[in-house]
Image 1: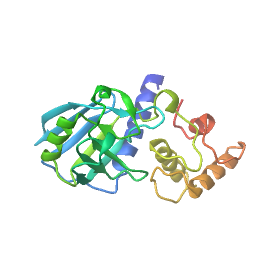
Image 2 (image 1 turned 30 degrees about the vertical axis):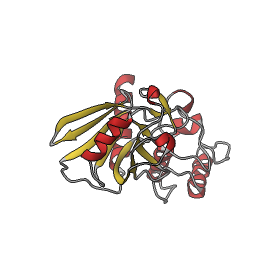
Image 3 (image 1 turned 120 degrees about the vertical axis):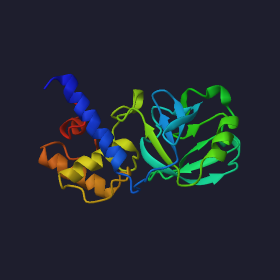
Length: 219
């Protein structure tokens, strides 16, 4: 097996984990939202056809936008200030994330938010009228993070997609019996410690490069 093919298979499996681990099974939908973090684009799909495309701003290296399958859980006319003129909340399990407007339109297209998806106010107002609560939202992007956030160390209090992936691998090894929720709590720490013991590593409950490697999350 070539290295290129191996990396492809690994990436496919990781996408499968993130996009099938949701607690919600979506039936055929008239309207869905696709968000591409690589392109910094939000696309509205209606009846399997592209209806609208919007430029967006996304999370920074150290506060990335969550990747996976979510849904719109709330709509609000305004949260004020930097949240612009509309708010569309997402059911991300480890924090408050949403699609919203901005009072800094010149930053659209940049990696600058705390994880939310920012849009021009006129665009989010248009989106707000098109979609309803429970609309599916599919977000794809760099699974392992980028820049300073790539394979960052994880410990109690850490949150996000990297934690989800570690929890998934530890559950597969029957070391973790908690929720795969992206929240690094005491159960996740205990499972990491058991894994470190199993691999004759220093037992500190912290996930670093060596743990990622031995869990098969990097080559």
